[in-house]
Length: 261
Length: 268
Image (cartoon, rainbow over the protein chains, first blue to last red):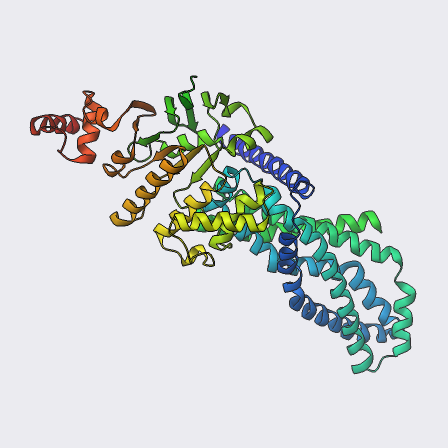
């Protein structure tokens, strides 16, 4: 009879343990950014991996999201005779919500999974142990550059997403469906405030932190065997990392919007 | 701890969950010599190496390296202590996204203030010494098992360690390649004078290389002696082990028959 309670308690303790370990992981990785020797090359490499190589996917996602917003927005607003505010609707939806959230979700799928798998494989093939034995801090060497690159790349990718999305909305709403060009630009200009841009930036920075943190942490501790061992453990940890990151992004989105709106 | 020993394990105990792996290991390791740890699979030989490196902490006992208890230090002091070690992992643990040159240069780039030219010269010298010339630009996935071990050894030697730890250095190699690896150990140790601790299954070949052999059995060191003393030991358990792994070369037929009888009764 006591067994289910004991199991529940065990799970609870395990969860607490995981959270504590992840907290220390984040702290040590962030501290690692400031520890010498500072090397710019690993950071540039990671900016390339996380940022530059995600450009294509962000460009296309941004373009089509903007285009579909233009399409949906135009017909919906026209029903109320409010198609002149199409620019405002597209811009605010993109900048406040869709830009940061969809960019973060795309980066999670494209880069987060790769980070988790890379770190996980390094762990199971003893490469992380080898670093420790060489007295090289694995947090500073492996994880910190990913954090810096994520914090640099994700806000930039979000900005690209927004700009391409706005252009996509313009293309469909104005050029294709014949909306008023001046009204589109004017309503966009008048409704988007600096607070919206600030919110977009804060969100993208927080999401970047969450993606790298969760994905790298899942890979780093893969040897503890919660998800099984070896290649199977890495594959499960990767799936788990993507799922947890995606949910965390949406939860954080709500919390940040609630605080900043 | 005298100057003669550079590592000393005293009463080291370790459990993983309900499984007691080490039950009070006492093992002195002499400076400048080769100590080989042998034993059946799953006796905790690799765990013992991880204790020496401070990767695993004992539940009880002390692991003294140069007079410092590895189990009681952490952070910067542990890091400093680890700079005295070179480690060759069972899988060589090379960084698979780095080339052979970058792998070997990594400890120098990260741990020293050496310039690129000096690093290049030092790595080139090691590559030459280990007969790896021409492989600098290859990646670990393109190397054979023996070459991977040599690259691992080259990387372990970069910071001029006092102590080298080898975890199953010849696993997965054919007899010719493993002889080659032993030859390289022998040559580099002669030249560089490091203390080496080897965990191995490769008996009897490893006996030729060992100054001391320690037998880990049932979570304790049963014997730590020279290869010759070990082969002549009167301890029935040691005898049984020797006869099992070396055949009947060193024990008479009668003795071996006796030991087989003991074996059947499950004494070893």
